[in-house]
Image (cartoon, rainbow, N blue to C red):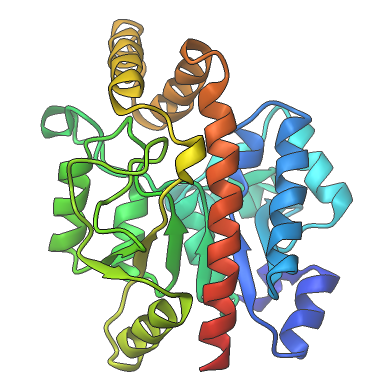
Length: 303
């Protein structure tokens, strides 16, 4: 396995020095935002991780290697590439062997983080059970990865384009703890709350770290969802965002958009219909997750 993995200088040095490392995904760079905003956001997220005492490791696949940490030049290449492949578990071996550029999803970032011995991963929102999945069987590979891979995911809940109730049911079946960070409610990405609750509420980074340590010490395999709500001042109104999502869903259905194309289409359409407000919210919640996730990583590293 080692021949397929390379580490950036910063990550390799951080690991040698025993620092906390935070994994970051790359689909948000390739498929989540337009250039140059995507690269600027990625750089700022990395800086937030450093400012909070940890080392950022943005993960992507290039030249047949899983890159744990990207150089400035590699970030730029990924951000401007027109043909980066959105890489989930099923695509990973192909992308490595074909030497394509691969942007890692939540699921693949978890896989690569575990290979590299990284326990904590920061993202925007997790994938989940899509609306209408009882007929389409459209369920994100993120959920299966959370069931099996020992990496905690700090996120702003699940994207509100999903069926949040079914997503939480699936996680419960798979034994994945869903922690509300300073909240009882499970956040819905663009909004601080949803009609569903998290399994537990924890009010400090140290408490989260202690729970994760206990989980893995007890050999309870799988990840955990640390749901950290978008800051209130950047939250969008529930009814506003839900009506826009309904419109976007109808359009996706009318255009026959399915499978892994649904999320990028939906996010693009929601951005268009909110006149960019959703992208602004998306960026702010990622920054907030990076702050909280880095502090949890540091606490976990100290235990």
